[in-house]
Length: 373
Image 1 (cartoon, rainbow, N blue to C red):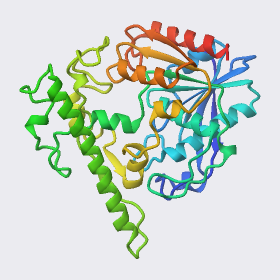
Image 2: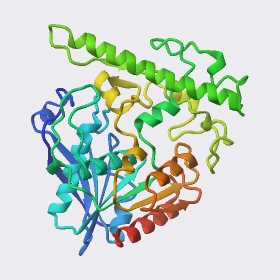
Image 3: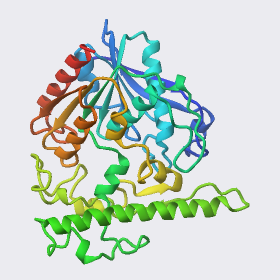
Image 4: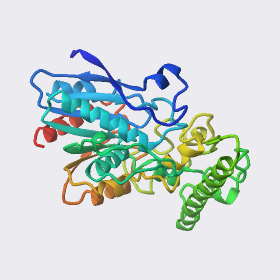
């Protein structure tokens, strides 16, 4: 087995209290695992906004195929409550710059799961830096030198972006943002009177109500932020809870956006349990973190950003993924039209859990593609 190196990369401080660790705040740094095969000339960077990717399933397989691979964590690893996407791309840039300093000829971004939209945002800004503040209006210290462009992007089991997920996963049946239990029965996907299967009319009402709920949360967040910042005591942010954020009808009805997924599942477990769980997608957030990641004003729309890039793209579609659907892959492909290669990973679940032969298949595709950059 190939030895892994521990990589530490210092980065500039970001927002106040972006970590509860005093050591991290005094000296902000990123941590990663690096596999360096002898003679490698091409490197890959695997990163997610908040997940710990240091044990990623592609790290060793790619290195075994001659691709030097850095699995890097952002400063927000395991804590996305205050995460700012505008800050995370600086962290990704630190990883790309580190690989360039090691002397590699080519660097590819591997956008897996939530790392896909992050990679697209990063490359779009690396090619043309336009961001100077956050959606909350706070200045962000981004410089062109912080974002060296990559040479290509791999998209695997690729979510469209955190704001796009919120729009399609949030539960529109919530009637009280402070109490997760009451429901509007006419909009409750778990009410058997509504389905599955779900009618076209129900789905139209449902999707409209999802977007309305997220837009309403954004309006409240902006109003609350204005109230806080008008105070004389210097309050700049506040925490809040978003209940019931995993209610996509596609989880129960396999006839919607059909693929090879097992109905009644999500990437984390049964949909109803995860919808009400104490810890689920976007559950805990600050006002500024919500605006940056989950709100309709987020800059993290993956396909929109990918359409602004000019590098080659490899799109790997896991056909049994319960959280990335054919319409999602079609959106990615349309955004990368003219620069994309697509491959279906038949029966692949979101994490390729229990599917080592598919891990090998994915690694073969990525290594071969990277060597042709």
